[in-house]
Length: 297
Image 1 (cartoon, rainbow, N blue to C red):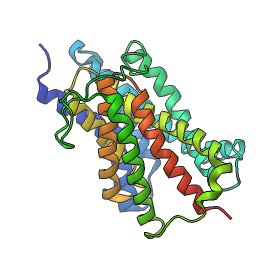
Image 2: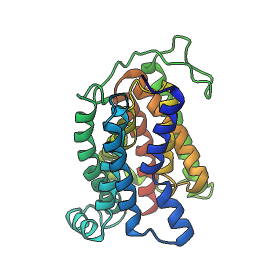
Image 3: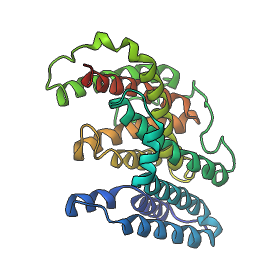
Image 4: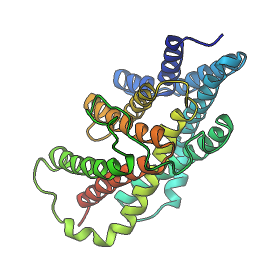
């Protein structure tokens, strides 16, 4: 007897709630610090969930999700320790400023993404099921009521470049308003020597975040939840992780959730990572480029 749809939704949402940064954010906001035991408690809950769910064949797919989330929580806790952060910081030396900070963050994400990818390949039984494939770029775009498009024959290889440009322009405008107080970003012409580093960092960041926030959710739940629901859940998971981003707070979570939802739709419908990575990559070029402007002498 299979689990009813409502049960799948509740179980998926519960595991994602434990695996997300919700508890960390609430504790930090209320107490001002995140106790060490919180990550341990979340890991124990996810580990127990994986063991219990594995006992029932019809629930084993959720055991896979619990296991992947456990790896993420454990890896995030490990890379956040002062010792490992210091060791990574000592290995990374780019400009003595912004790019050292960005490089450290990307190195930490890599240490999370590698074990996550390894577990995903086991849980999903192969790279294709974990969306580690280029995918079918000409796949049709499904109906997206939120954006009032799709379902009319438009293809992802047409929509993706347009979406990438619009998202990049929106990000540029948003950063101007929130960081540069609505004025024009100065000294953009001096970014050319920094362009190779910006492109490399943007490419790595987009890929690693894709593994942690898209493949890690869409892979284990592939075919379990409807496309729209799965993309929504994964998008919110991505949005929560950006609570302390720019913009921060609830507004940042909502904006990142919409972006995450759209990128997950692209991943699920094309059955690959290439197009969502490309859209994310173009946006990160803008983000890292404008961040570099802030520290130009």
